[in-house]
Length: 173
Image 1 (tube, helix red, strand yellow):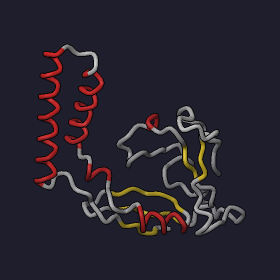
Image 2: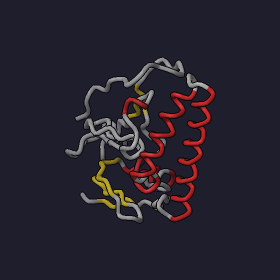
Image 3: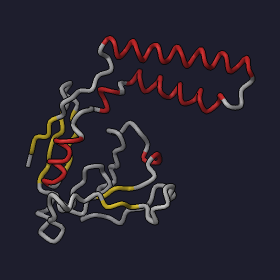
């Protein structure tokens, strides 16, 4: 079954907790039923230690709160984008509905191909150093930021950066 979740950060918004209940009770509540051997619904990887933040493109440490669904999983699914990227997840039917309606408009791997991730890291590094830099160094850093922005815009215009949408959930169990 599920494991005891551990907070990944403080409580930055003062909610009084670090693990938040993301169970869509208003659509389906099967917490008291049988788990049919699949365990709990696991849309973000918290139940089996395969935590996924933005499709695996962000580190788990970047999340202030842990979201969990306490419904039992109803089936296994493949989530596939138009470019063929796919991942396997176990979900309750309520999360299948929610993902199909609200979270199927962007494939993280399509929107952040490897070169785009490199450029993002470069930009983030420059932004971290910008505050303490001298005026001459700042000018060079701002110029480098502009070069990165231009390259990202070109990637989007060429179609290298896309949404991959719509994503499709297909039941495999």
